[in-house]
Amino acid sequence: MDVRLSEEQELLRASAREILARECPMALVREMIGDARGLPEELWKKMAELGWMGLPFPEAYGGAGLGLIDLVVLLEEAGRVLLPGPFLSSVALAGTAIALAGSDAQKRALLAPIAGGRARAALALLEAPERWDAHGVQLEARRVEGGFRLRGTKRFVLDAQLADWLIVAARCEGEPALFSVEARAPGLSIAPTALLDGTRRAALVRCEDVVLPADARLGGGAASLERILDCAKVALCAEMLGGAQRVLELSVAYARTREQFGRPIGSFQAIQHRLADMLVAVEGARSATWYAAWAIDEGEPEAHTAACMAKAYSSDAYAKIAGDGIQIHGGLGFTWEQDLHLYYRRAKVSERLFGDASWNRELVARARIDEAEPSQLER
Image (tube, rainbow, N blue to C red; front, side, top):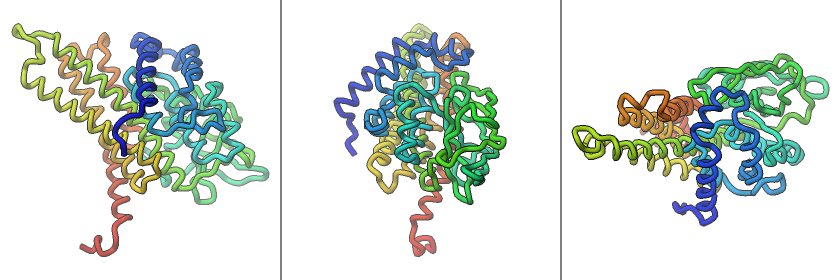
């Protein structure tokens, strides 16, 4: 793995940072907390014109044909500014699911509008609490004449209320599968769910006898769903990394200017040690996230465990860094006027999405056991 970004990736990072700093200031993020749109339509169109919506998708379907590592670069900048709206859910989650499990016709019908910014999609996966895997998919997809009938409930579906399409994970004839469902399909209901992080939108999705045509089935299987989840975890890790980096920067700047006993608090060893620990945690999250993205792009055998380890580390690191940033700011840190509490809220919600650190470490342990030879297990 080359740990350096290419010239094109550095240009992507620089341009994304400049554009998001100008177009998505914290004042806009705060405004969007109470706005049902999630993100101004003008900014969404601008992001589409820049090619961000189609960044990881093949050129044949309106995308740029780049990889997950390029999407990670962009999402890291999105995480720095707490970008609200359905970019993560539509592109990195639902879009990736379509790209990995859809047929050529389905990709042309669904990916092209997403890449062009003309449509938005959401991935409906979670049912049982904290069961982020194929075994947790129990929503029933029963074959009927001419298609399928879906019955069941999905919880905490990101940006479902903003989506034109839902990619729903269901169990069909004993195996997990994915289905494309129009957001206004008869029998489908979407009820907003409040989150600790007001910059995100989530919903409870109920399928009550939703009838779909046969070509609504994208594909799936346990292996395909695992790959989709791995990509989703790495994408979320990139967002968390950007947020953690920004909290560190804010904390360093505050430690340089806030004075106590006639000197900047950054001169005190206790503050220096805490900032140093935050820096180490940020760099650890960066290494884990970039490696996992590279492993998935290259089809490395350890890609699954790399994605799970990145999510486990980043979940803990972002929450700890955000909390330490508040501590460094003292009593000012948790006030509404400061931005740190917004990063802390984002960190705590991201910590639970796609499994917390304990869940992902359990997945790593299971994978290691499955890979081990019988003789090793006996010892």
